[in-house]
Figure: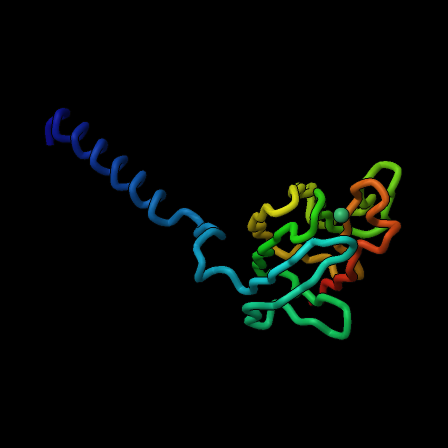
Length: 155
Ligand SMILES: [Cu+2]
């Protein structure tokens, strides 16, 4: 084999390798068939209404508590249904002065803010951190008015 053929051969192998790496990239959560559960969340004065549209063993309402299964992918379809701006935080140990939960197992997700009448979809992988958490709103006075809802991450 001459040098030219060897170089062409190496380039072909490199291109095939790159295509292979691209084809085997991890699948992405925005693919609808990979979403395990879908939950409608309506934020209003002053609370969170929940409606589980699709569960697939990943989400369940037990009494007032939203149970979420670790490792599953959950899409929250959130809308601000009231007449004012609300925000959507997840975590435990609320700090209303700082307007956040001191313990946020969903980091790097921080929070979502929605003006009245607007909506957004938030897709999260439930972390492997079993325990009791909440969703809450820290717009001035909202948390104190009862704008929170318990969540439990289960194995
Ligand atoms: Cu609010």
